[in-house]
Image (cartoon, rainbow, N blue to C red; front, top):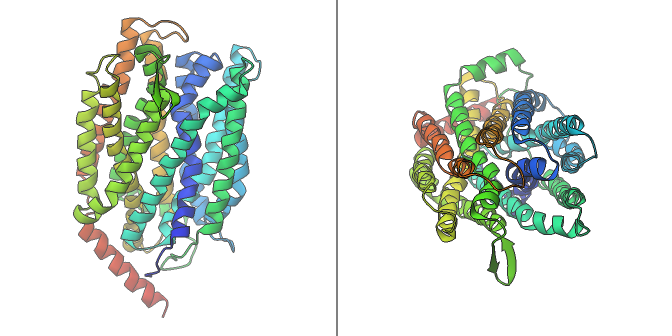
Length: 460
């Protein structure tokens, strides 16, 4: 199949991750802070809650992938989940940032229930959305382009959320009620996210069909996946990359509030931004720059080499992030831009490489399990995020962090380590995994040629 993917469809596909990423970034950058400083929960308890709910949800992702693979409807396998899951997604997001007047135990139960529900609904929407990449086109370069659009819009959605969340919270909470401010601000972003999901459903098409249109047994699909060496390697690389990313995101607000002093601000184009917001938005903008850079580089030297180079650079830069002092704002922002460019480069490569693994598995087994394979990418993302988020909460508790109080030097140094040394360990693991990845450009091209031949024969 050599059908050209138009701009409207690329934008439509990208809007789906813009919707998901608005909340993903809010969760990664603000949810721990919201629970500790707004809702009044202990940091260590929140870390445990993150681990339990996210691991459970991560294990549910393959179940959603299996269900999506077995879905038969006039709307396709994966698109119906976007249509019917969009509104519950938005409602769950609002409830997650709501603060009922419960006691300490009731608050923790509410956090478990609402965040757990949000993550389950996230899976029901995001796993089928990710799987769309494997059925919109079977051309590796088109997939890389679609993946780049996806990540471009993902970081655009993140910037949208980061730019507006604090002003919206301040606007809606102007009577001195930050809890009402957070709930109302999240509701505004939820409406935008739901609209984006509807656009993705309307503007995309499912084209790639398996060699044989038959219902595969779940046992066979799971056995194939367990014996898929490239899948295991990419799973490890994705988990490690997400640990690197999630620890930095989770610690950033604390880094500026309790180390750099967040009451400082920067005047950018006559608009006063907190240093935290500036730091996070610069990171998302640099992510976009990394995405724009990665497609031509990957087309020239290959996905694996591009990934290795970007992650090796991120490793060095994260180690350097330990050096700036609390007043070295320009050094902090410069390193944030460079690290984020590297992170922006690797995530579209991961999604594109999962699509290659779907083809590798189909050629080897004769069965196409797009949803199951892509659900593993979501699982690795959430599992790495789970570990990173839990570590952030636990470490804050271990260092003796107390919300809304001056922090001792040991706590400040711990927060600095969460922005530099610990993320560096994640990048190092990711480099080790991807160095072992066996599907280079020539292998992927040969797999594609052989599959196209088999599809032509099966259609005769």
